[in-house]
Amino acid sequence: MKSQKVKTIFILSIVLLLFFSVINVYISYVRMSHTVEESIANQSLESAKSIAASIDVETYQKFLDNPVKNEYYREIEFFLNDAREKLGSLYVYTLEIDNPKVSKTMILAHSGEIASLKDYPIGYACTVPEEQVKKAYEGQTYITEVLNDPGYGDYLSVGAPIKNEDDKILGYLGIDTSAYTINQIKEAAVKRNILILIFNGAFIFIVLGSFLFMQRWYQREVTQEVGHTEDTYQTEIRTLITSVSSLRHDFSNHILVLHGLLKIGQSDKAFQYASSLFKEVETVESLKVDIDHPGLSILLQTKKIAAQNHRIDIGIAISPVSFERIKTTDLIIILSNLIDNAMDATIELPEGERKITIECSSNNTHYLFKVMNTGPEVCNKELIFKQGHSTKKEVQGKVRGQGLFIVKEVVNSYNGKITIESSAESETTAIVEIPIK
Image (cartoon, rainbow, N blue to C red):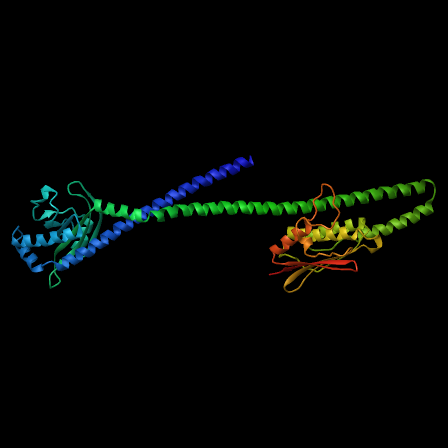
């Protein structure tokens, strides 16, 4: 079931990856095409302004006074055709705009490829859209989109006013650029920028690929952390169960002894035995640990019971600190491993010499955790933090040398430090410092 979900998520991720890649490439292509078209239109408009400013306005005015195909018409036509050839445009022409709806073509320069244009009449209605005609009527320049004209082909049109010396508008200079020419420029631009389009598509793959990689990495880290935490809690639960079982077994034995003494009439001895048991009950009652931190309280309660079972004298000093800057799971991992190591070392000594002291406190900058125990001296204080290294006896089926390695990993994750102080006088102290900020 889990593998099926992972497979579904993976397939969905690939589909989304391809979808966004295609969308990204398409948007890039459309944006590039629009930019090319806009650039051509602006360039054509600048050319129209230049030609309109260069035209012989006196000759053009004489033509307007008598709009027929005379010598003035031919002179302006020659000028416009020369400009058309230099620009490589489809048409260059002049317009008369005397109303805001329809313009009239006065002089048209063309390539001559369209036979019907050879006798193009003066004052024929032009195909410039009404929106652009209105702009021209108001004295503005204009730019159209690519127009679809079945008679004269598809083209983009621009227009600029022709003014005389008195700044009076005599007409408009129009330039039409073939859609075929525009498409050729677009194709050339796409070819030049194909690497950018490919990069845009690849970038989406890289981003989503990185996301999937980070997700898998995060899941692996979480799984590892949960594994450490689960191992710690299982160990503590097993210790608690063992301690409770031991207390229950001892309690049963005590009851049997009391029952036997009373049965044979030895009430005085039974009273003495009960008195000794009372002292032991007081000892058990003293195991209660009064700490505000629930996780830490349960841990130390469990460890204190385990210490009693092993006849270890354990002392606990906890400052009234919440330790809120450390996750409870990490706090348990650090202290449980340090206390377990201390117990393992202390058990090797005779009962009267077994002693452990646990201190948890803080100052203005750090949390401080100290676990002191009597026991053999630790000679190599650096080697003990390496994974797999252990000073304990090998036990079949049990992995050794993981505790302090895990503790160091957790401490390092908080930019803290752990040190081991050990002396020949059979006393070892593990000190953990974790920055509060």
